[in-house]
Length: 185
Image (tube, rainbow, N blue to C red; front, top):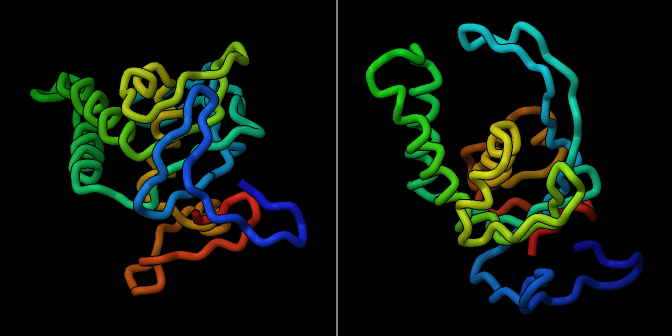
């Protein structure tokens, strides 16, 4: 949440959700604009390669996601499993488990994505994702991949746009953000 110019940020005691007050997290959280979440219509993928981009849409312009600023071991394991399966032949043994791994990804992300103001493809407000893997399972694959990227590497907008992750030195352990649209809480 941004503060009006000239005012000091106020200490947050709880996050505001449309239907109820959420308990304040014990660790920092970030509100991240979702303007760059893209969904392609008509995209064609053959043998794991995009052969036709299709038309890009940005359904979450002006919307945002609030995430806890950490990555769990469970997330790393699930993402690693999905990457492994993505590199396999779709007909290979074990490739059928991809759906199970996406289900696990929705489960771990629902613990980290604590609120949003996203709307569905018809412009209606979506239910809050906290503790609701079923809500995340209703997203498109591109939306889920987008959220995975946000949750996996909380970082500044500039770094995220450049496609690089956080560094391994101690400066990435407690990143500070200066962008008013992406403030650490």
